[in-house]
Image (cartoon, rainbow, N blue to C red; front, side, top):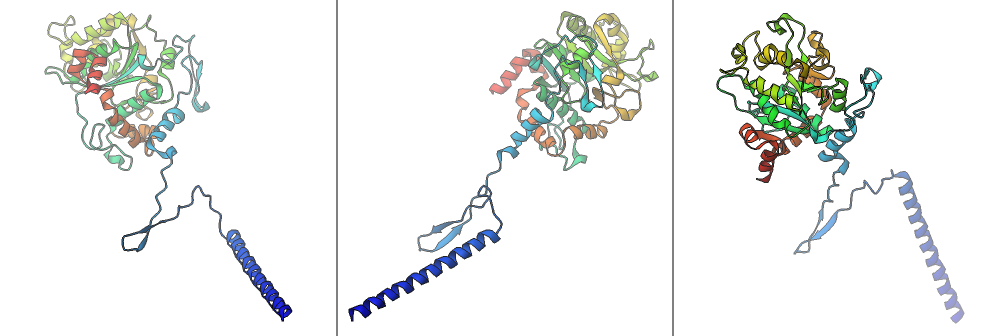
Length: 402
């Protein structure tokens, strides 16, 4: 009897073991099929499981999993950093013998470089205007400019943004001066006073009209100073010649120098020239006849006319004339001035300038850098009265301290 019971129990145990083995085997087989037939997903991108919430009544609900965080590499700051440090980082050193962009063009330094190191904030870029530019689509407008609405983007505002971004790439100091229009002359006559006040804090300053832009964003301006042989001991001002046409000539038949692009060196002679230029249209001027250039009219420039007709003839040794094709104009004008380094879009203020700056700030970069421009406004924007009273450094410190 005992023997039969033992055999029965042993048989049941064997049967139970066999069933367990079959169940485990089938489970493993299904798991294997599931893992081999389904696509593999990296745990880095897999969605975390939903969590279960139990309320006071005992009911359960599923809470959606948290959204994955935006990768740091795609943040706005990272995109701007990539643009400044990778896309348009300086392509050569100030003393490099040859500038050969994309192996398509070539310019060589004419002699051993004077400027051998980056100047950083010892070089400044100046914008000045008496217009507010605070409407929609403009540089101080309520929303950042965007290529989603290219028609609404203001052309001259792109010029300011070109100057600002170029300064950011190379570490130059950027200023925007909101000037007041004088009662008896055009606002552009404020250039000599404003430039002189800011230049005292720097070695070199560059002024550009809002329709003039830097063509090669990655080309250091120190290299251009070497290329044009502009050194503090041999030069005070440098300006580009205008295109060769009768309406661009002074009363002596000489082509005007375009005052929409001015390079100023910090030396005593520069301030003498600027003072003479500023006084040129005054009633007690030492240059009789310069008053006719106070206001513009067809065929008669203002500050440019006074500078070209009077000032440059008194300081010829200290003012350098730059080739029009290198520092003025743009190819589409067919004027002979191609704007190889500095483009001046006199007839493309709201059209061609968009094509040129659009290539420099494509896609979302226009909006990204305009947002940064507006954010950093307290670090570069100065009212004229504050500048003339305190100078640029103290004026900006007062703004950022508020």
